[in-house]
Image 1 (tube, rainbow, N blue to C red):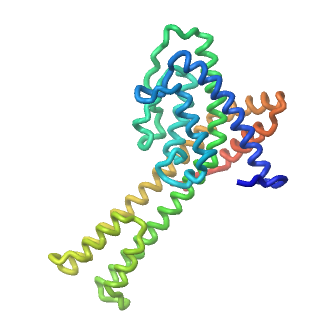
Image 2 (cartoon, rainbow, N blue to C red):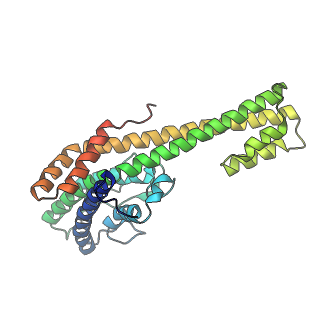
Image 3 (cartoon, rainbow, N blue to C red):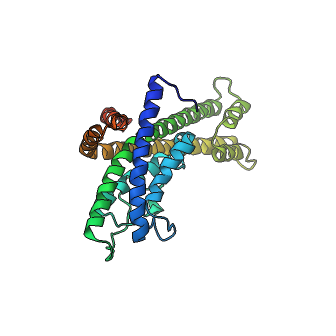
Length: 291
């Protein structure tokens, strides 16, 4: 991608790149300690634990389009889980990551109980905790935009889906009542334009069920549509809850971010500090959908 020199977009990229460079330094320091102490992601992933979190940084720089899609390394479920786990590791720096709930209750702390490593000196543990504290603030700021875009894109898609389903439901009601000159072919045409392949197939199967009477088929289709709309609304509410959880996590880190911005300023690292400052200011202004 071509850098826009001298534009606001270009300055934003420069600030982000400066922050990623700082994150990479913290990552290397943490990785060195974890590799020597054999602190791994979990029993299946034997890489140093920090590699798991830095996978998100790699995804952002290599595949930024993933932030608009569900079930990717940059989806809101995964990034909210990451932030909550990083916050936990500040106080429990020897814990392992439990990824079994990444796509589930991501707003909950999901790490194993810390098991002390006898060979790890207290000062090393304290240094690891401090490094994770900085890395967590960097992470919260860097991925705020990805979380917001994933949230907005997926909610917009679900809102559109609900509107399409409501239109089909209304058409079926008119067909059932014999009003508006609605024909079965018109209903089927709307159904064929649904993005949800599974739902589309189920609806068409019902409407073409030879053993059912017309009224029974229309009633079954309406019930399926109502349940699908309820499911979509529930997904939207879950996304809103995750979005709020990420923003809340950022706000908890606000004081840490202020301290880091001051430190970066004293070291002449103003670009990274400005990115941090802006990200946390925006977190304070952002809101969910008000469920």
